[in-house]
Amino acid sequence: MGSRSNTIENFRALRVHQDKSGNFYRRVEERSVDELPPGELLVQVQYSSLNFKDVLSATGAKGVTRHYPHTPGIDIVGTVIESTGKRIRCGEQVIATGFNIGMDTDGGFGQLARIPENWALLKPTKLDTLDSMVLGTAGLTAALSISKLEQFGMKPDLGPILVTGATGGVGCIATALLSQIGYTVHVVTGKQHQHDFLRSLGANDMLSREDALERIDRPLQKEQWGGVVDTVGGDTLMNAIKGLRRECSATTCGLVSSPFFRGSVLPFILRHVNLLGIDTAELALAQRANLWGRLANEWKVQHLARIHTETFTLQNLEAGIAKILCGEMVGRGVVDLQNS
Image 1 (cartoon, one colour):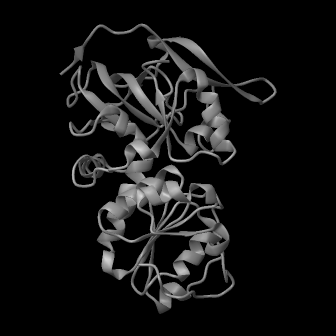
Image 2 (cartoon, one colour):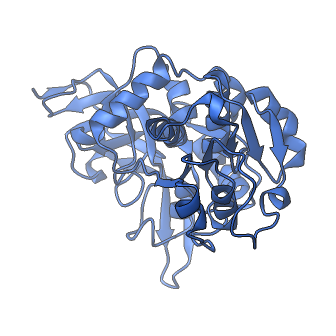
Image 3 (cartoon, one colour):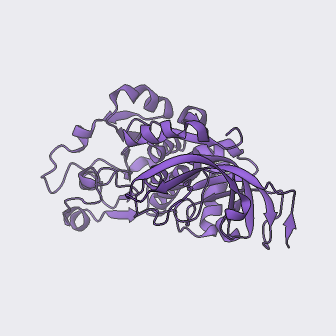
């Protein structure tokens, strides 16, 4: 089912290079479509989004990207302008996140991207291209976290849900989504000046980072959480687990605080709680399609315009990278490739 439209031969992309001294630098470059990697789909990218993993790739984190020069951008939405696949046709709009996109396969910070067909989904018709990238990997991760918690018995009447790192992409989307589907949401944030923002998304109560680490040396905390959506890792995660109510669960998807925590088996033994790992990078297409379908319908996030706090182009993307590196990014930043 090969199909093809008038292909753009040249395009602009953010490229990350490593010089002979091992230092990394970035610049916007003109590229040829022939330089792209193999794949069944050539996508004219409309939007991407700015994630912590993109910043790691852009600054030379070899745990994310091993080979340079490279184009980051783990999220893509756009129109297929060339297809040699069997499932997706030329002219259809697709969403592609995760897998190897933006890691060691050139990603969404370019106006064109070539990817395997089995990394892409048709964009739900009820979700426009901009909103799909306000969500992006962060929205998919938040949705998977909530879905998995509900599979393990989470219900609104079991107690408030704790969301850590609440001003980040996963955190603020999880806060908004949990609130609108009937949960009481308590959030952890180190940004006191963002309390009004979090309340506008549906947060019912705020905890500081210090609050979240209170009595960290105790093996158990007071039972209070009906579930936990953790995005930071470290001791914050372990203290939240200690505060789970009996047979409730926590998900974890991030390590911005630390990939390690001081663990205790007591919450797991005495309260029968669960710690659930969340990763969307290798999530099966059927599961992705289900979650994107929910995000376009019954889980459509009402506050996406509020969560979308920044729009970048290739020309000013450096400012967004610096903002994330300094821990100053709030909400979601979208990268506009159409006007780059």
